[in-house]
Length: 100
Figure 1 (cartoon, rainbow, N blue to C red):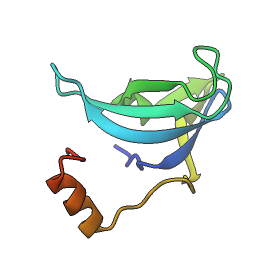
Figure 2: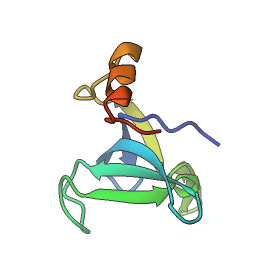
Figure 3: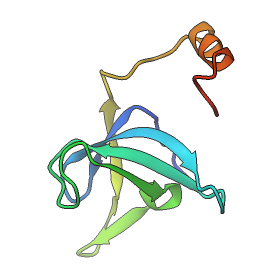
């Protein structure tokens, strides 16, 4: 399975970009879910809408008119993403700010 990059920008095969926010686990089944934000005016919620999709589906290919293509293709890193140092992460963890 391909690696999904948190804070990565991905293009959707239908057009438009999304920003991956996190990888979460379903509370009951523990299935991994990709949490992402629409960066375009998507039909189901508009710019800034946040969605969850099973990781297996996010990373899967789709067949469009007989051509296999990625459902979501990595484009670049999100420049707005905050990259935490290990010390910042540890301090936030101690304060209750992050949970894996």
